Image (cartoon, rainbow, N blue to C red; front, side):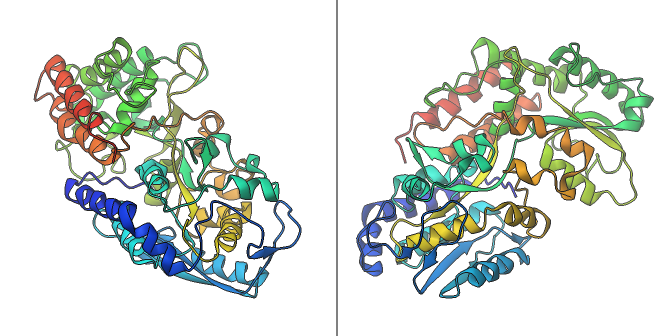
Amino acid sequence: MDHVDDGRITVVSRRRALAAVGSGASALLLAACGGATQTGPAPGSQSTGAAQSGGPRALAPATIGWDTFRGVAGGVGTKWPDAMVKSFQDKHPNVKVEYRPIALGDGGQQSAYPKMLSAAAAGTLGEVHAWDPSHWQMYQAAKKNLIRPLDSYVARDKYDLNQFYKSFIEYQRWEGKLWGLPSWGWTGQDGLLYNVDLAAAAGVTFPAQNAADWSMNKLYEIAVRVGKFIERTGGAGMTTTMPGAIAVTLWTRAFNADNLSPDGKKSVLLDAGPKEAMRFVYDLANRERVIALPGTYQGDIFLNGTLGMEQAGSLSVFNRNKAIKDGNPKFKAQLLPKRKDGKRPSQLRGGTWNVGQNVKFPDHGWEFLKHITTREAVISFNADGGEGALTRPDIMNDDYFKDPNFRVFLENFENSMTHVVPANLNGFDFEAAYSKFGMPWYKGEVGFEDGLITLNTEVQKILDLPTI
């Protein structure tokens, strides 16, 4: 799943570990592996057989390591990883895959990366692992020579990247190279889930999401009407995922802008478009007072039926369906209004499967990557592995994805927007700055103008730090 860790102490330790790996551990890893660093398949590599897309290659006897926190839902292993190991070994009886689950601590997914960095420094990290771009890890892992580009493998095998949604493949690219294959992924909190009964009681009708009158102004009007109605009974009109960096990105995109300059060097929250977006959210929260702000409620007010609508996405539909026990509250999904360019505001969230750079059997690792990203494997990754892996269009005809509320979001999978990467790769402190300096602004503890200037200034301070 998609976890966020804003802890600065963890960030510092990761930096030191990355520095250690980058400065000297690569040489130690190389020596431990007993071979030269490779950037892709080479003459005399471990695989033999015809180069064909999708077909199993004959692999020399080997033992490879799979170090992963994926498929370890809530700290408890699911049956998905074992099934992947068995089915791969059935195809390749000469190859043993050592599945080594990484337990997640209180920091969620972010707690796994220091363990992986330590294993890399010790030369014990396996052939296959995951450094997710949504958590800023893939870029650092590539920069520190922990993972290898896959372009030469793709070319050799004529591997069809079009079996994935294009946006999820683009998410695997950095500095002109492909660094992984998609693992989990969704299009972010790019829509709304609204309580059908509360909307009806408030006299609100949502326009069809492709209707001309479905606009940000209409959304504002609906949020106010529902919020003012529900507050009489102690409920709230709406929740958002503000003030996190992901949410700021999405709302600024809703107003035809973004929160960063395209080169990732400048925070642009004081520009006209982003500022209009921030005013939209601030006024709903503090002038209209129809947003349930953090600290003003307890429990899950969506589930207990006292929330009109929440900012949410395709993955949220599955989570809500799992949590609702008696069929109530009844809800419907709606994408956010289109922008001037015809696109929906979104912010792709996704992960990656990578092959280690300094490993004994990179070809075997590549074959395993292909194995765990097939249509059948990805369907199982969702249904049995507890993940939101919505990365392939050919899985969407499976019964698992038939919920009409989920299918509302399919439009965005074809056109989702990826994030702008901070130029200095310091995504951890970048995200932490939004939480720390955005929360007083969001809650109205400071004025709109002063609070936004402070937030923009503090984010820029992070962007001005040296590259990590």
